[in-house]
Image (cartoon, rainbow, N blue to C red; front, side):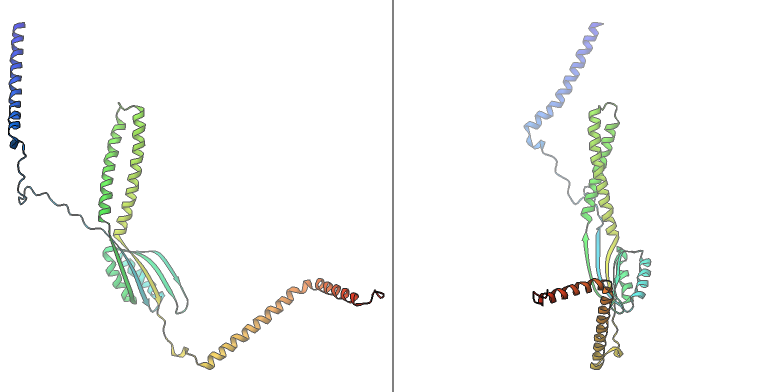
Length: 283
């Protein structure tokens, strides 16, 4: 029995040696022939099978506009503005109106879908005269692609760390270190997600800063000649004199409660001065 086992072991050893020699021989031949070690030439670039597909990324652009508009009636324009915003799906993020009579003006910051900002400008033109339009655009495609790549990398790291924490073989020190790193990674993920939402919102909704004023209408009947201006000046001067006299009268009225004290002080000063004027023998 032992003899048979020894014979079987010799056969296995011999077969192993043959296999090793068959693997070493090509290596020795490759050392002798350097050309054999060179990689095969690349396939021609014109072939349809070897060409890598190109990934097309849609451009992401942030659009901002500054518009100056002159209208005939500011109140009527506000109604038109609300109606136009509802039609395109926009909204007002900030507004400021002031002035009186014909010198009324308004400023609005509007958010309008980027795909509809040109149609919205046409609606504004129907309500008044567009005096000036300034548009600026910023391409944020590279920024969004970079943020997306960083998010995918961080989420992969987060998944791997969660797997390490869930293993039973991890000791307490390793678990604490992984949890600290996991908290840092999650903080970066939240920050990048917030930045991504902000930029995507800016791309989707164009910002329009609208400045509007009410057109002044010239009325010939409101023009004045020299006599009218002189009469108005005299009237304003008379009103100023009346106001001054009224103010002085009110001042005297306010001093009435103090009149006894003021009279006593004046009487004391007068008596003292007269006593000084008398000769010493009379004092």
